[in-house]
Image (tube, helix red, strand yellow):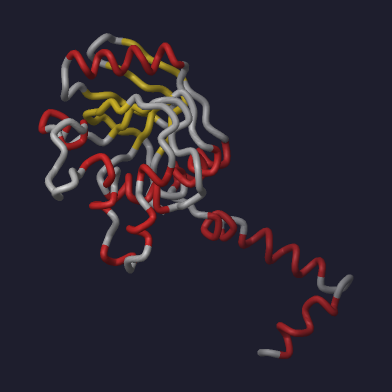
Length: 210
């Protein structure tokens, strides 16, 4: 899994509430082989007009927001279905952090597993950050997962946030569930040695296969 520690990068505002995972990436993009990538599916219904041309009214198609790595979103971002392709497409399009008042629960957890830190801040804080971005496109934010803070250099403001301790550790260290389990390999081996005399039947199949 891709690790995340801290990031200083431009941000883009997309403050619409209740953006669901089907709006983040429509279903039709989920049938392609993973190696083809998902990037052209990001907000496809909003980014592309009926004739196939880019929609100049959509924020991500506007030149002043190109290169953003932080998305500042509205409440309940990532609600709806549990498709993991939603955080994956955001990561493939360069986003490493999302800031919103709230997220869909499954989407929130899936972000950590795709190298993205989802930051929950109060509505007022999100509005202040979005206002600074609108006033000066290209404004950068610093999202520090270690310190659990968002710093807005344009105003000198720092906003604190909380993340689940285990998910935070996994993202900081770049560990998925398997890698996390392997960090305890020595303790697992010690347990097996101590447990074998008490439950020998649990180890017969493994020993017979050697």
